Length: 383
Ligand code: FAD
Ligand code: UDP
Image (cartoon, rainbow, N blue to C red; front, side):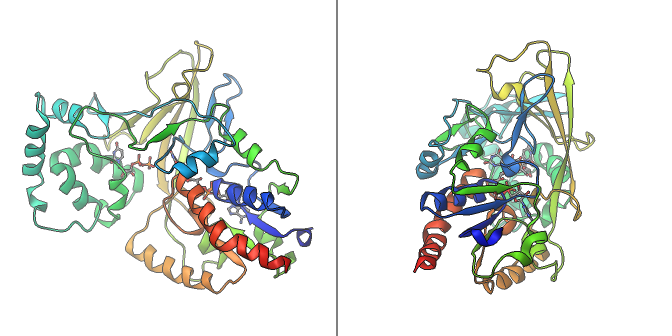
């Protein structure tokens, strides 16, 4: 019965679970809805049945953050392993390390270089962008690494991953990847990094464990919307265009098809993530999940691998990544304006704000919005 609650949250991912946990802490009765059959949103994981290996069901999830407050908050619900992410990429039958670092550059150009040699070479190769301001992903990438490295490691992979001309993609996508003129091949720069010792789903079980929180799975908000009294605040982390019945058109999303296999070998590729830069190979990367948890006692005769195929999403697919072309941006602004007139609905999370958010950013945004908007609203309710 929705009217028995002080707050309704649509979506049991990191954004929704953080708000739920905070509100329950204030003594509020919270109802969390998710249309999926499980909690955790896209961070959900489960143990593959044949091997017991933890598999992140919606693609590899690596926790990392520069934000100490978020790190401390999450450490209330889990401890973390000391896993540090590293990625390799396959190009024309060779393997290089990603993100692009001095090792990648020396190997690609076939000779030893000092950091200054490599900087000079890349600057020459980026000369076409020397006095221009990059305005899209391709220009930004060329300005950072020059055209030959861009064409080898970025262009094909990005085309496969986004199915969109790199000249129509926003530059921030590529600035997620560092470029390093030393041999540091860690994927992330952040101070805090690791994987949850007991897996991702256990975090959500703990966050949602308060007796003040009720969770309704396989429950679509839109099937219930009319039964919710207008006085109860709603935190909505579903897709913003769907909330407004797509009245300004659909926002562009990319989805991923995952092809999971159990192989009869103890080690298929020797590392957790192998990217495939060649455009002729249809998948973008292969994940081998056992390597995320080398501390666990997994069996050594079988392994679980997942190939990722990216394509643009239709309404029926899981939306994973906002594409954010200029036309998407225009539509989003219209939806955002409409959302500002929904006095009692707070839009948040990856889908609700049409933004590329890492887990720590979703949690950070939820903590902030709770402090500044939601807690004051809940307190006002009392009076
Ligand atoms: P979500 O986790 O998407 O949760 C939203 C929930 O709302 C979903 O469970 C959905 O079912 C539910 N919902 C939607 N509409 C309705 C409705 N109408 N009714 C009821 N429920 C509804 N982040 C990292 O930090 N590191 C990574 O390595 C990383 N890798 C990623 C890889 C992939 C392939 C993807 C897709 C994401 C990755 N992320 C990663 C990002 C991470 O998944 C997000 O930051 C996180 O999921 C955001 O949480 P959220 O609560 O905003 O959204
Ligand atoms: N990218 C690339 N080649 C790679 C890895 C990444 O071109 O080997 C580009 C691609 O456009 C990708 C972006 O860099 O979308 C950001 O990489 P990240 O690993 O953060 O992307 P995600 O896995 O989250 O899609």
